[in-house]
Image (cartoon, rainbow, N blue to C red; front, top):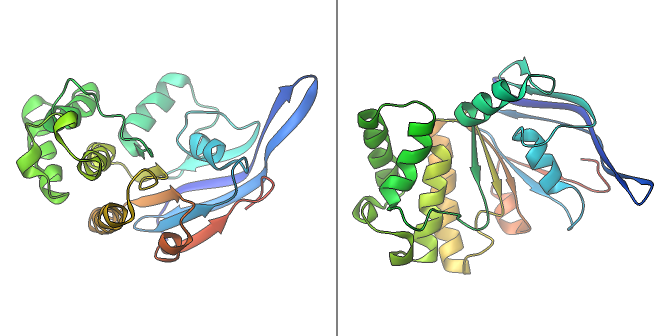
Length: 222
């Protein structure tokens, strides 16, 4: 099995008011290429913290994070930033698109920052906009698009640098049920077509059951 991420016995704790607060208590999980894993759990169970550690935005207190066979938790910040930029895509509940830029430009910027040529970046952006059914919105600003369209652009942006791993935090949580279903279906089809691994935080048990595997985080443990 081609694993895109391995998390081994990860803990995360904070000092708060002179007391040690344990958020994650020895979490271990693997995600393979092409596999979509749902992460469930009540508010405050550590889901966002786990997502941030998996995305190299936060360091674990202890344990190992391995991406494409490379242990990364002790690597320098510059290396982690490069790996995050090239190997990991992020999608959040709120789209966080840049309001002064068109849909196409929102997909160009991450690629240009990663060193992709303008020509190649444009071709890739147009390809993904077509894949998510928004070719006709390429020159539109976020304010000119519906909530579902904006979230589809955000998903395309998360995939634009061809990541091995996609991390999504409630990607349909801010949408009405009909739009959420459409966006979720598009997300699953795109992940399958690109054969990347995905960890998706959701409170929606019905959507979770349609993913390849469901994990539940309780009291800092999977």
